[in-house]
Image (spheres, rainbow over the protein chains, first blue to last red):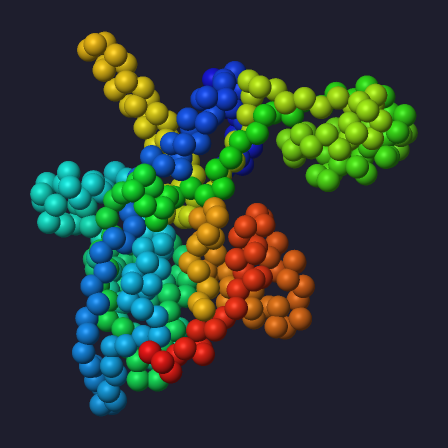
Length: 275
Length: 63
């Protein structure tokens, strides 16, 4: 298998994998979606009662949203994850009680009127653990309303809940192979493409400018029944793309996904040998 | 009610895009251009923003 990177950003990756099969591409997709672990808020404590600020104004811990909705919204926030630092809570040295090796604790104390944003979540300990995206609205508070929340983030995978899914928009397509046979109806064919794959040169020749943008829709073939261009998908090469929510970098995710696939294959071969 | 944190379909974080979208569209910018610039490419994420009815202020006194 050969990998050619087209784009490798912090949150977005696009690459071509060659000399492989649909099964391998799909294994990578499934590993990225389901098997790469990340931290997400799992337990939320709501502290009830009234609070008084420095000026003596009294606030009551009540909110326009139900507690379970707030807890769900907190769960979906992207928590920065360093996979070399954290372990699963049930496999941790603390025996599942919660310690800095397996849990990140956030506190959220805020009084209205205001919009509570993800930047108001204060991590206990390292300030680098602040929520990746600071501008996500969590809830809105009116006059005299307040929240006091402790939230515990733990490591998990999307096999258990989608909040532990770091990758979004994970997908692949066959590598488009576009052959230009004639430039007789060049302009017409270039205009028929919804992705702007073709260009027409000054001399009227039809050229393929952005073959990777082709989505194999065959609009260009339908213009004259395939007399000018031929479009097929190469079933051994795939254009792969995905995004992350910011908790892990795109590169870390690919490396971790490959590690998960090879571990799974090794475990399977060992169980076959044991038969 | 309040903007969902993530896109229902693909799971991209869309919550943080809404305040910016609402501010810029109310100032007269085209929604299409704003969504493109925020980086919401797929139509699943775009519908989260354009079809959102921000009614949280209505229920604020009922808390």
